[in-house]
Image (cartoon, rainbow, N blue to C red):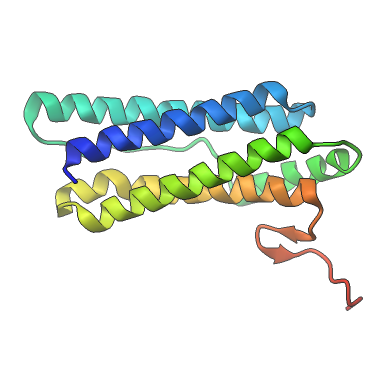
Length: 169
């Protein structure tokens, strides 16, 4: 795959997941959940803008630089605190539609992370840098969405760590 194709494909992934997060931000009943998805939608929008700027640079110069790509996703501690509060409120609500949206978002994030990881492996050294940061950020998005699913479904996991055991110990 060429760098141009990779950037265009990355834009498509980011647009699709941005749409899912935007819809989730509108449909979730809980204000904290709506805020989380609004932040994720904004983050994906910045990714689209970033990739579009890299594509524009490629089209003008025939080269692309991996300009800094920041994230607004807070620290793990801040996420834990916010989602801990959210867990209590969510336990009393029905989230069937929201759960479906979360599963779709998770599948898209996993697919995007896989794609960006493949680009890091496949592209030339100077082009890999463009996608390496995406791998880190999208992996974080996966963790947030999975945590939301775990909270809603009450499976007893939090970021892949067991919160309780049925065995009693």
